[in-house]
Image (tube, rainbow, N blue to C red; front, side):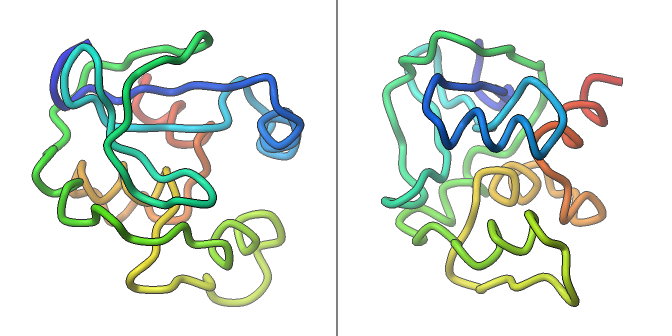
Length: 129
């Protein structure tokens, strides 16, 4: 894993399993690698932070994500409303400008706004191909 790679992951928690079920894939989370031991991501409830990489179930996709762009969102709160919108997709996205979810952060760091609204598994399929 190197700086700018995209890391897709899943956990054993009920929330992770629920996300996988509704998203129809293996992954419930996505983050940007900073180095071999750290990622930047957005997790509930603390939001966007740099974290020690300690995941068991993951796949790394080589990419050139802009880590500095991801760091622009450090300390953004977790965007619960956008997370809920992705679950129901009713009306316009319920996006809060100073909050972020994991896939939104990754899309920002890849500078690919055309991928906005993709879930972790949808993003995985796009990046894998």
